Length: 512
Image 1 (cartoon, rainbow, N blue to C red):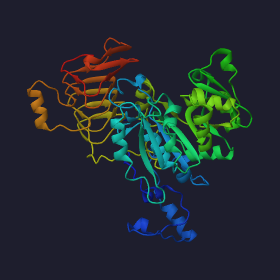
Image 2 (image 1 turned 60 degrees about the horizontal axis):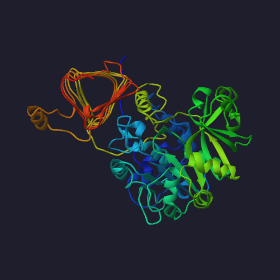
Image 3 (image 1 turned 60 degrees about the vertical axis):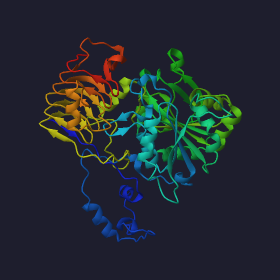
Image 4 (image 1 turned 45 degrees about the vertical axis):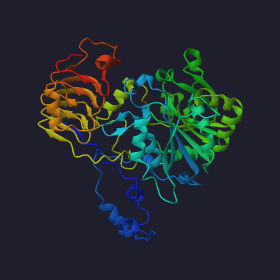
C-alpha cells in the first residue's frame, strides 16, 4: 500500500510550548498558558482529577514516538547555567564534495526540511543546554544565515540567557593561522570561552545524525569526577576497524587508545561493555567501543590541557585526549547504545536521508519528546496533482504534477513536472520560487526553469538546491560508473550515486 510521510510541524522553542512534553506532576495554571505576561502561578490538582486528565489523553499516532531518553534528569547545578555547548563546523568537507562546494558541512540540507546543524543544536536544546557556540571556517555564509534565522531570537529569557552564536576562524596578532584542527579551534577562542561562568564544555560535531540526552552524558561525567568523558559507541569487529577504539578498566576509565587497529591489535582492544551498562548478550555481540568524537571536558581541565600541557596539539581525538590519558588525567567512557551516523561521505549522506522514508527508520523526525528544530520558513503546504507516491518524504512548499515518486526525499519548494519518474533519489529543492512569467521567459530564451522538468527520469541520485533539470532528461547512470568528476557538466558520480551540483543546469534531453 502506498504511503506518504508528511513532515512534522516545526516545534516552538518557547518554554510554554515545550512544557506539554513533560510528565504530568502538578497541574499548572498560570500566565504561561493563558498568554498573559507576568509571574507563573501553580496549583495542585486532586489525584482523581489528574487521573481523569491522563485517561482522556488521546493515544499518539503510530508515526509519532516519545523518546525514552526525554525523561527529566536531576542535575545540580542545572546544565542550562553550568554547561557550554561547542559545535565544531568541521573542515573543508572534501568527502562530501560537491555538496560542500558552496556551503559548510553542517549547512547541508537533511530530511526535506532541515540542515545537519539542526541535529546537535536540537539535542542541546532538548537537553536543556542553551549556551551554544558554533565554530566555523569554510563556506560558512549559509550556515551563519540559517543559525541567525532559526535560533538567535528564541533561545531563552533573562534568567536562562541562552544563545547560539557563531565563532568564525580569524587571524590575530597572537595567532596568524586559521583553525588547524578541533583542539586548535577551541584554543584560539579560549580567551572568550574562559569568560563563560560554566563548569563543563560539551564538544560536539556538526555532521553527525543521532539523538542523545546530553544530561545523562554530563551526569556520568560529574558522578565519576572525570576530567574528560568520551561518548562511546559499542560495535562489532567488522565495523571496529574503521574507528578509533578505546580500552577501559572495570570502572569504565579509559586506559588505552588505538586508531583503526587490525589483526591482533584489534583483538587486544576487546572490552567488557557490561561495565558501561550493556546487557550480557549485546556485550558479546559488540565487544569494542569506538569514540563518537563527542566529549564533556571540565573547564579547568580544558584550559590546562590546551594552554599548558599540549599548547601545540591540533586535534582532540588523536593528540589531546590520548596525551591527557598518558599524563594521568581521569578520562571516562560513557556508553551510547543508539543510532548514530557520521555523515562524512556522499554514500553515508544518501543512505541516511533515504532511510527516513521507511516506517521503521533508525532515526525519526517524529519524536515529540525530543523534536528537531529548524528555521521557520512559513511556506504553503505542498501541492500534489495526480501523483503516485510510495515510501517518500515530501517537504514544504513543493509542487508536483502527474509524476511517480518511490523511495525518495523531496525538499523545500521542489517543482517536479508532469510525466516524471523519480526513484531512490534525494531532491533538495530550491531557495526561491520562479513565477510562471519568469519560467516562460527562460524557455523562450533557451534557458531551463528551476526544478525538475517534464518527462524526466531520475534514479539513485542527489539533486542539490536550485538545480535546473530540463525536459526529457535521464539521470540513471546508464554506464554504471562508480566514480566520475564532471563538474563542468554539472555533476559528479561517487559510489555510483549521481550528484547534480547546486545551481547546475542540465539541458533538455541529456542522458547521464
